[in-house]
Image (cartoon, rainbow, N blue to C red; front, top):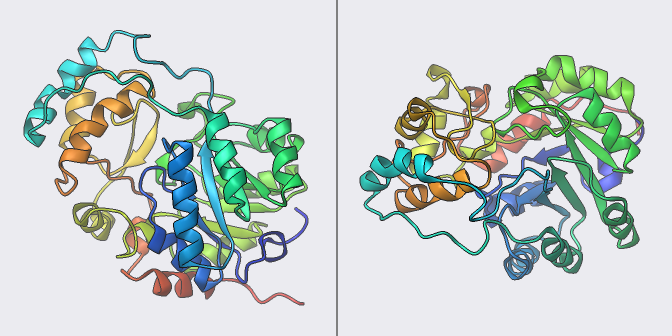
Length: 349
């Protein structure tokens, strides 16, 4: 590992907000940037114009550095009409009924083109572009660097980290299996890439020559101190911030996170078609019992219909949560940030 995150991103503390794809908020992202960390905003599914509007809102909320996050296509995504969704539709029919919505017609496409999203990111000029599910193309890295934008990749294994470093990224998030949300594996199946944070981080640190950001199972000063002891240059934290009032999580989701110490999280493909960690509920159990999960992103589009219609129904939403969610005691983002910052070891200047 070489360099530090403060210099790399122009921030005061090496604390990065986890980018919540589909659940990011302007207030939370801005609050982390204002506190001196790197606020991040997940752009999953955002077309170009919405990215530009989001970046403008962030600029209005904070003058500090922030990151924008994109999902890279892996090549296994399906398009409308590519696959028979009859069984998946039947499995979610009771859930649509519970939410009081009708089965949706197929859209023209499930996701906007990556090129359209990148063009908007270039216009937005964030301090960093972070990516998940792969190694960014050489031309993407080159264009980002030409514009003064740092590039951050995400790895769930040493091999993925090595591939990202070879691809020219400026920093790597080493995401342990404890982390909330999607497992962003891209070299092997997600089920075969479930290395824990304590095992993953030091091996990645030894294997690459760019700063490593530890993620997964970090929710208080103890986790931060442990990450630095393992050789990380900083931490990325999701669940502890997701439960705060500044996040876009619904009250039902935040309530579940507050009780997470007594709730086991599970890894499931039920809600999106890709493996993700969250708190199980009626929707997850019903879809898994039916054994009828459509490929990504078709499954994510199907479940989004009842999730959007019932955002405060804990039985019908995606309740992403990491294994350490129960460690966070605060519902204010600034308080969570201060708790995390207390774990940063003193370093010579």
